[in-house]
Image (cartoon, rainbow, N blue to C red; front, side, top):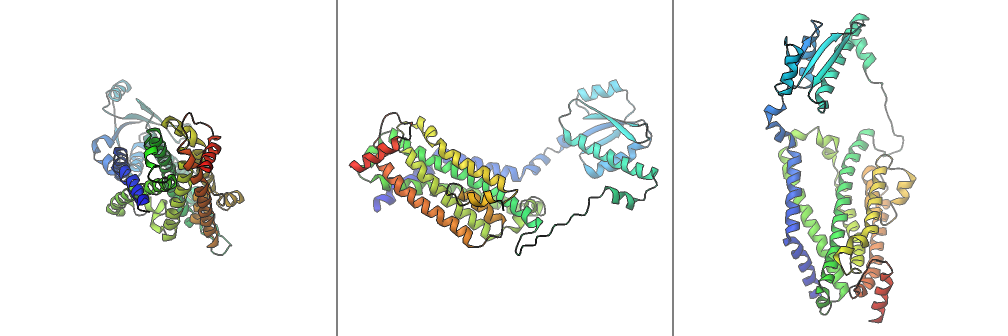
Length: 416
């Protein structure tokens, strides 16, 4: 047993000290800090945010109304009247002294129309805000012509009253479903990328040791099965360490800006009402999903003799993870679908699809537990089968790009 822990410690600390691990952790943590402070970083370039637009008002009355509307919609857009000729204004646009030119006219119906000129139309935010401001003015002027009161205008343009009510006891409201959908969406990406990254790392680690002939030295002192599970658990601990660092950085960063995000990012993604059960399900299904795919990855990694063959060998496994993720994305819109219910009990899809259902629906306790038991049973069966393949696979050398090598590996194990 001591040799098992020595192998586990070696797998863990060798990966922990690797430059790739350190660099990737720093990059991901840095990206997280950058994203949560992106608005502040942009605001530090305050001078670049101001959009100067000159307005030529041929109606004589629209400019003041437009400026009042734009001030409310977007404070970064700075309107100013101009008596310059079109040639002079276009020259200023080319020299980037101003962002653009807006010409206000009156249509045949007596309502506002406009022409916007700019060096490029790539900045859709400016044109959208100007168009929305003019639309509001047009609605107001049209209401005056029809002698409609402000209340009547609001009644015409307001959204229709459409309420939703769930009859099933314990069913979530529309607001609760939207919040659950946001947090489940984020955590599904977390599970998907984590499982695929660390499972691939397991296969690569096994193939690297085998191709460098280090495996031949190791199996003389430690059984291949102990090696396999030591690598799986060791790399799993590496993954948990990396995720702990990233989550700690994210927590501290978000904590410092919780007042800025309150009612915005937190509310739209459901973080303000995040329950402990959702977090527990995410952690449990991530760990079980990792052990499931890492065991399969170790099995497949033991069959190849060259690192170049690893990706080809584990490609079907990668497709399984991707299919589970795509099914989960489909299920975000209809988590009660029979298709989603059935696939949540298929072991290779359970980590993501069952988590989707547990996070979004008010399921009976036994359903997520059945999903967990299905995963545990599959991991045990795959571990027993994988151990037999691994024991013989590490002794196979030569070109390995066929799953027929699994039979050769088992035959080698049986003949030992």
